Length: 342
Image (cartoon, rainbow, N blue to C red; front, side, top):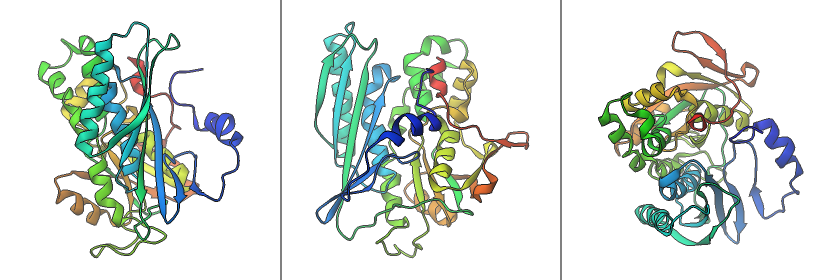
């Protein structure tokens, strides 16, 4: 089998279709495009998500905290706790394990998230570090519960820029392949992108604006101001757009000409022969909104850039891409992330 996430078809046939029926305690469970599970816990709801870091190398601890916490934040919920599993190869040193733990502790501290447990072992089943994190947050009774779906006519918005995480990994793990191909200052810049990988701030800001079964309007925003949020991980912006449309049973048109990148990310992708639209992009949050100007303004007030890059359409139109030359073509389903090419 190819490296990377299973295709949607494989995920459905090999995994999802074989899972047992959910109990009445679970509001929302596993599904394509659904990164979080929602479980009833008395009057409150528990929101939880798991993610592995397999290509993070020396920065696996940093990335492990953010990828799972970002999933919780994309539900409009503040993450409060996290479990970390570290599987180290036999070649690992104690110093490398300490570095990963220190990274995770530092990033969790920044987010105000407790590391409450996990597991650590050395195994010859892996040849590099695998770090798995499971984050969770609690929604108290009466709080907004943004279990929405994108709707035809909603605009597709992205925060910050695309290819943040991919650029960060490339600069930290493959700088030798970049030297002489991109300016040294770009490599240095990309190594700082770990500071941009969290979307907890924007996710929790937009949470109260989301459509919800029990939320009210918030500071003048209509309930449908934010219908769905999704953090951009493996598969990049195209993969995230496809998954949002698939989850919502809509079509989507992504305009590549509007997707923002830093000059640094463009240069790194060009040097390594990577498709920037399909490169892992934690740090960017994708939003389906019927009121894009209001969303952009709300984020701008706290210094977060947001850009409209497409629109959700009738399901009969399918998933499409507007290419840089203006031509329109079908959007391929998510496949192995570009990061695995290096």
